[in-house]
Image (cartoon, rainbow, N blue to C red):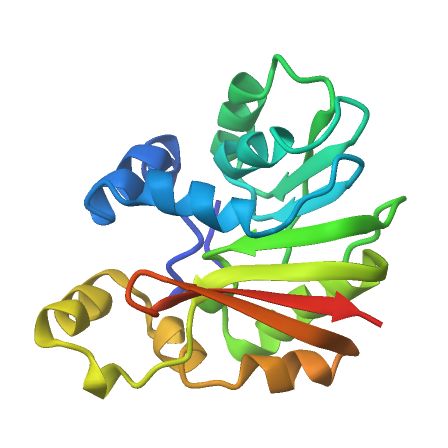
Amino acid sequence: MEKLYPDSGVELSPAISKNYDKLMNIASFGLYKSFIKKAISHLEIKQNDEILDLGCGTGRNILLMNKYVSNKSLLFGLDISEEMEKQFMKNCKDFSNLKFINKRIDKPFELDRKFDKIFISFVIHGFPHEIRKKVIQNAYNHLKPGGTFNILDFAEFDMAQMPFHHRFIFKAIECKYAFDFIERDWQNILTEYGFINFEEKFYLKHYVRLLKAEKK
């Protein structure tokens, strides 16, 4: 599939998609598995919640979310990658309440339901800012009133203040859009779309944040 955003790091090649979970474990020096479990525990998922995972990848995160809900709660993963869809279907085959939707998150879409929670993990930073706005609008449109948009991604920080070895790794593995992402005031941006009541949880030396925002 041709990349729409050549400078983006979130449009993955088939080879990277096929080995995505392994690569994430390696890139995080083995920390990703425990970190993502902790972050998902902070979503405060209720037993009857219905959740949409934007850019769901292999289904790794949605399987963790599924531990908090009943088998009557539908959890949807949305992704455009055919390779990710194959892995999602394989990994989630034992759970009839886990569904896959093949759509782009960066273009307007319309689903036939609203959700209690929408989750996006390390995806939105990889788009140009004008495209991020479309992702936010998609999330807002598909939340129930009082539902929460949960962005797990880089926090706001000054890259110049990072220790050299952290800055070197960040520059080496991240696309140029990430450098723009960390400089923006995301609570202010989300407020413009009608989100309120923000909550934050920080991880990995405060370089990563779970930002929760409630739909009015």
